[in-house]
Each structure stands twice: as structure tokens, then as C-alpha cells.
Image 1 (cartoon, rainbow, N blue to C red):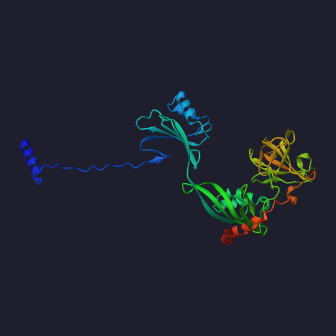
Image 2 (image 1 turned 30 degrees about the horizontal axis):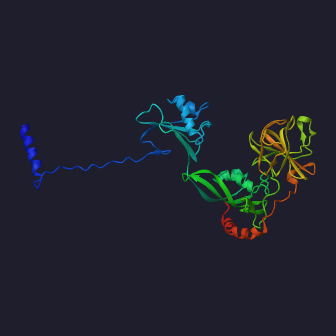
Image 3 (image 1 turned 60 degrees about the vertical axis):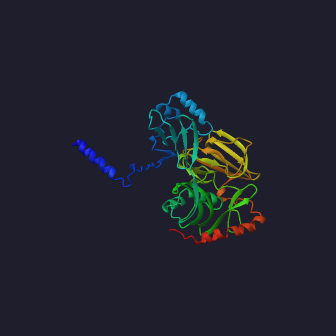
Length: 409
């Protein structure tokens, strides 16, 4: 019976060939292509992924040794990547990834360290040893923002959904013309700025302010970015009349922090029996390690330590003005060194007679200590006459755009 069924099946197959010629029933085989599943440029279809975060005491070598790579090979890897990738310092809490080949998961094939959103490091651990820093492509986006101040500039930025770091950039632009420690309710601002993004939506920081408007105590003040020295590429900010917003001195020695104690020659302190103890400086409170900036160009005439001042630096700016910065954690400059306005000369600390971290900023005019906030300080050099006409034309579209931005309340 089985043989009969086999014979009948054979005859049916032959009868299907209408031409009478031998044919082979061909089956078309379509190759299925697996789409790459890239993660930091590595195809996860071919690798097993293990992720972790840098723990206290972790080093690059320790991580590799704990994952099956012995020290001689670690040394070879470090030699191979020298000059391309720096793994000497891994930041606590930052993520890293190990990629194991699915054919052999005894030791990893790639190490990826990704401390931030803007880039990462890839190190090949087997076969051809090498490392590379990958910087993600970014794009600049021009944005607009505005606000009306209720309490502080920083809180206004936060409450309006604006990148609060814009606070520091705006305070830098107006550092010489607006006292940000004395803002009033109702002061308002508009700003046109550029911000850098990766992956289309992740901000990696403010780039710069292109134009701004700040209304303080009812007084409007425009600011426009402009290259004031084309040969040196120096960029500065000017108002709508081409007057520089910069002064010969910064209003304070920090980027942006609060005044905790002002210059006061009749200050009374309860600790000393309510006696008058003049305070001839202005205290700027800040966390330990905050950079302290030279408020104007000048030469370092003192960089030392005393019991009362702690670590301190004195800068002579010219025959009229000198400044001093007290209670530093550490000094960065030496006597005889020339510094420019905005240079870091030390870091906020608690050395000397102080009850908390701050920098005491002292200001001399003609050999006498004075309150810097009450001085009529000299302006910076004005824009050159040959650039003024170019500036007037340059700001027209920015001023028009600023004027059209509504205030957000």
C-alpha cells in the first residue's frame, strides 16, 4: 500500500510539468536583514550590554580587572589610548558601559564612558587597541525670552520655564550698569540669545546673548553684542546709542552671588558689646571654591596670608584705584603678575577671621577705603568712530525684534 501511494505521488508530480520537460520546483529565499541596533555606535545585535556607574574608589584599571582583563593587558590598553582618551579621572556617579561579544562573554570588547550628554569615550579592549572621543553633533538655536521680576531674576527665569543659566549671562552683560543685588519688583527684561542643543532637545548650555533690554527702576537699557576690535576679535556690549555698557570695574568679584554685608563705617556688633566696628569692605557670600575675579586690569602687589585676612590678594589698577580680596581658600596669582578684568585670582574660602564662606572685597580710591557702589567709576573706551556707523546699521533688526517681544507675566 505504501509503495502504491509513493508511485501515485510521483506520477502527480510528473503531470504538473505541462511542457513535458524536467523542472525543479524553485523556492525563492528572501534574505532577512536585521536592522542595526546602535548604542554609542556599537550594534547591540552582536553584543551583550552591561551598564554601571562609577563608584567611590573606581579606576579604569580596577573596572577592567574586575571584568576579566588582567593588569598587563590593562597597561597595553592605557599605552594604546594615550593622547586620545583620558581615563585618569572618572567622575563619581557617572555611567559607563561594557560590551561583551555574544560569542564570548568572558571579557568585554568595548568600554564606553559617557559622563555627559554632549559626548562620550569609546575604548576598544581587544584585537586592535585604541580609543576615541566622540563629540555629538550640536546645533545652535536662536531663542527669545522675557519676564517681569517678582522677587529675583533667577526665580523669574525658573518660574517662566527659561533656562535659569541665562541669569548669569544676562547679569554679565549688565554687570557694570545694573545692580542685580538691588532689583525691584516690576523690573523687566527681554533677551535674544542662542542655546546649544544635542539630540534636538537636550540643552548643553547657553551660547551667548545677542541682544537684550532691561528696565530697572523705570529706566530702559538696551544691550547689543558687537565686535569692537575686529583685529583681536574682542566682543563687547553697547546700548542703542553706541555707548559701551562696560565700566573700568566690575560691580563685584564674583559671577553672580548675593551681598551679605555692605560697606558701613558705623556698623555695630553685639558680640563686641554693641560697639561700633567699621566694616570697610563689601562681603559677597558664596560657596567654598567659587572663583574670585579681578574687577579690573592691574598688577598684583600683594598675594599673602595674615591671621585676620586669611589668604588675600591686592591689585593696583592705576595711580587712583586699588582693590583687595580676602578670606580666599587658595590664591592663584603672584606678586608682579598682571591680570585682566575677569581673570580668576583665587577661590572663595573661610581663611582668617570669618564665620562663613565669602569674599570680602575692599576698594581704595586715592589711598582711602571707600564704598565701591557709591563711586562714579570711569567708563570703558567708547566704540571707534569708524565702526559706529556699522554698529547703527547692525542693531536695526535686533532692536526691532526686541521691541516686538511681549513681556511675559
